Image: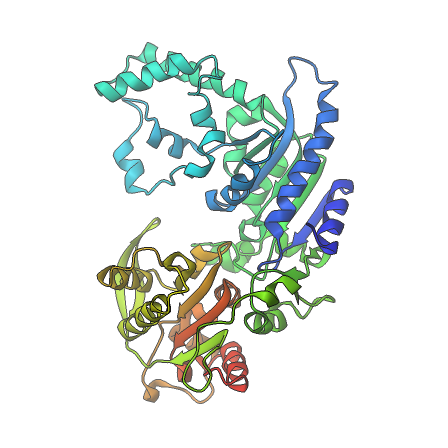
Amino acid sequence: QLNIMQTTVIKQSLTSAFTVIQGPPGTGKTVVGIHLVKWFHEVIKTLRENLQADAKHICSLYCGPSNKSVDVVAEHLVKIEDLKPLRVYGQQTEEEEFPIPGETDVIFLRSKKVPRVNLTIKSITLHYKIREDTNPYAQQIRKYDDGQTEEVKDLTLEEIIEYKKLIKDAKVIELKKSDVVITTCSTAATVILLKNLDPRVCLVDECAMCTEPECLIPLTSYKDIAQVVLLGDHKQLRPFVLNRTAAKLGMEKSMFERYAKRAIMLDTQYRMHPDICEFPAKQFYSETNKTLKTAKEVFGRPNSILGYAHKPSCPTLFGHVVGKEVTLVVSTEEGSENSKANKAEVEQVVRLVSELIKKGSIAEKDIAILTPYNAQANEIQKALEKEHIKKVTATTITKSQGSEWRYVLLSTVRSCSLDEFKANPSRGWQISRLGFIIDENQVNVALTRAKEGLCIIGNQDLLMCSDLWKELIESYHEKDCL
């Protein structure tokens, strides 16, 4: 059931040419996106009645900056009766699963860690649907696929041309059956989509994580788009721009942030215990005319099992650990990078996870350990495996946006000796000594993933050099949560 503000933004989106919806953590932005797809489908059905047989296919387009950002919505849309969603992945993902012999460099694709298809939406994924019996070309396509499975061999040029034509013709059939096409912003401009689709509505989810040129790809590629809805939150993760010059010149500012002043904010959160929500709501969302409220349903949840001797139940907790940070080289999707780790914090978060599990009421899958650094996430994962803990998530803050867990432990990693401290640290010193953890957007994401309990592990003395962290730690001190 939608709340008042969710209903308001849906009504406005259906009647406006351009709508910007800000969804703070846990406010049901995904729910709004799903309802918008359903309602726009009803509108588009009437447009199709006068469609000529040879015209491009009228539909909705649902885009985002990454596969994860759109898969979240696709997982819900696949369950809706009378709706035909179609998930379109990029060429690299398709060719890793169905390589063209003699053309596709599978080893190269695997070395790049090309994203795999989300199995829960396999039934609506384009390159799988063309191989199902409902598609008239499926049998011929599968014959090629099966032939390559039994004996890997290069196809002749004529066979490759025929195979590609079969794939194209089969895809056109599936595209023209679809009600909403779900894809990334960059994939939205592939030739087969441009030639066969005529979307009248474009929704861009997690728009605050898209660079402006990336967001413009779907918006400018289809001339008949009449309604645009941007969904996101510029107070959470911003676009990731590797080139420092581009970032300084404004590439980090998304289209969503540019239009943030006209955004309608969803104002009721359903995720966090009020004590967890209190600081981020005040720190990141109080500048608007509306306050971020907590839904009444949240108050009926079990008490947090985080705590210590003098206070056995603390939804928020800070643990002071003076460890030693080290620099390690780690492999990522973008290549190798220097990253930070802290063994003392690894030991503490793994010990706390073990205690949470031993208390009996918390399943491993309901716990996550977040950190700003890939190296720390890797070290935590290794330590969990040594303890035979397999289902606890250990990941970076940037990969956690859009996810939630009952309990979250945050390892801040950075540490240094007291003689390295400065009385009035400059911004440059803070960036050098504290790194990612003073980025307000990352801090907001890290503090808002937990439903029932959030425990932060870090060097209190160093963190207090940041105004943001000083306010947070002082608020925890006032609540006797240190």
